[in-house]
Image 1 (tube, rainbow, N blue to C red):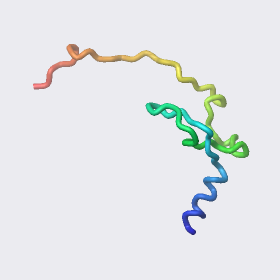
Image 2: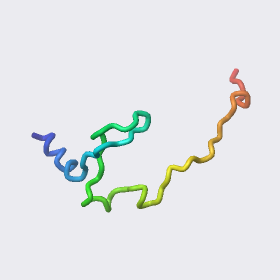
Image 3: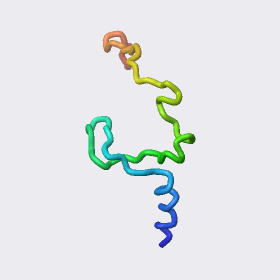
Image 4: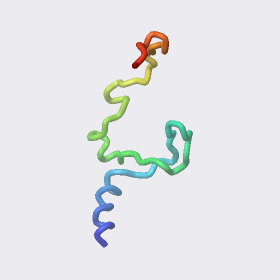
Length: 70
């Protein structure tokens, strides 16, 4: 009974997604949650803050440039 009382608010705020794209696993049906429309104003969405996933420059140190540890 206690678990149901804990899950009730979660079910009120979130609903199951039809599908979700998991990094490294691909798309899996009914595996993710999304915030319900009535709470959307409290969610952090990419569209709201215009955050993208553009690739940035990467600095990779070549092995020969790293000093050897003695």
